[in-house]
Amino acid sequence: MAGGITFLLFKSLRANAGQRKAIQIVAAIRELPPGVPLTPKDLTMLDWFNDVPPSGSFSKLEEVAGRPLIHSLGANEPILKRDLGLEGSGMGLAGRIPAGMRATAVKSNEVVGVAGFLYPGSHVDVLATYASSAATAPLTQTVLQDVEVLAAGQTIEPDPQGKPQTVDVVTLLLSPEDSQKLLLTAGQGTIQFVLRSGVDQKNVELRPTRLDQLIASERPPVSPASPKKQVALAPSPRPSFYVLEMIQGTERSVQKF
Image (cartoon, rainbow, N blue to C red; front, side, top):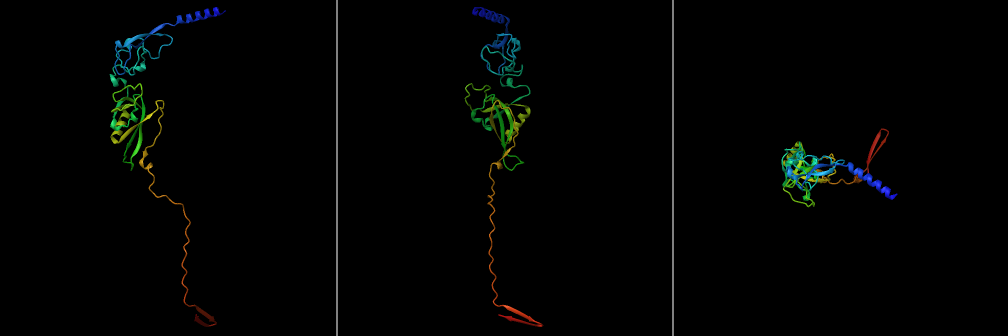
């Protein structure tokens, strides 16, 4: 009985294996850095089962050759649509900019870089501190939220070991409108990055924080109401004499004592 069950199971698995046919998809022939247009020498064809092809894979080399690589790839790793920039989008950092977006750089002397832990791919909020003509004191305001760091210095890939690094320039991936906001803000005061979680994509409503909201009131504290003191009035001086007036009928007499 055991032998019969084993035979039937082996026959079923062999039949299923015979139905799975191999297809070929485009893969990287070796480790490839981002930002460089791919050439036929960088590519190879990799066998893959036809029933579970990777989503966004390519079946022809000419569909991939000439397009810039956005993310680094390992040897024999399938190349997907999400890994490639548009054909003709350029080399280096330009090849990583999606259509309709802009790469905007900010100098390090205008930015506090979260202790060197800003890496390509990090998400930050941009805060600005400046003096406004409408306010009597400086204020700090969040001008941009959930902004992606495109490059830190000349590095467009994060450090594999996550080591902090000091950079001269931080490049952000922004829309054209947000690029104008960032450059205007940098010219009005100082800006600082606030690092946020990569999974936190929620924007919040924030009001500017003014300096006078951080300083205690200069008015002296008001003491509790105390009961009013009774003021004793000085007694009026006694007169040195008394006057007695007597009226009897039509007669009137006055006597002093």
